[in-house]
Length: 159
Image 1 (cartoon, rainbow, N blue to C red):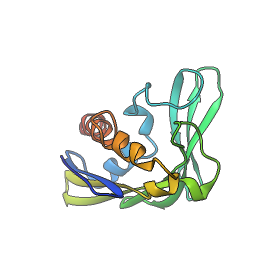
Image 2 (image 1 turned 180 degrees about the vertical axis):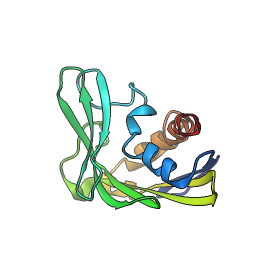
Image 3 (image 1 turned 30 degrees about the vertical axis):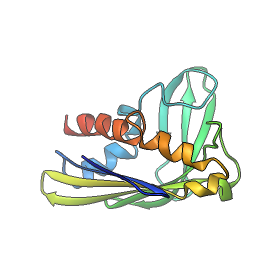
């Protein structure tokens, strides 16, 4: 896995042991299989991480009591090569309703061969979150952010 942090973006890239179609499916509609239960901004315990598979679809957590807590919108749905979503989370780690105050996550899938796929995640636009945006960038770049999540994903997608 490689990771880059520049002044306005975090990039994490890894090659997984899975064909491109499976790599895309596990990252998107099967996100619940690798998303940690403690990575949730809702009020109650996370029961399920959900991605609605279409442009305009929601990314949300369903809590154990059935409450839904949205945290993103699907911006690009291009199986099996590109998935992008808004990061609708503010600097207080609460849902953000103003699209102009959100950042963006692009995930691109490139087949290396029939059984391996390179997955490149770029989280950008942190400055849209307003003053103090650097804290959000640094948090998602930390081991508990995208690098750790990508490791969870790599284990699940290879199974």
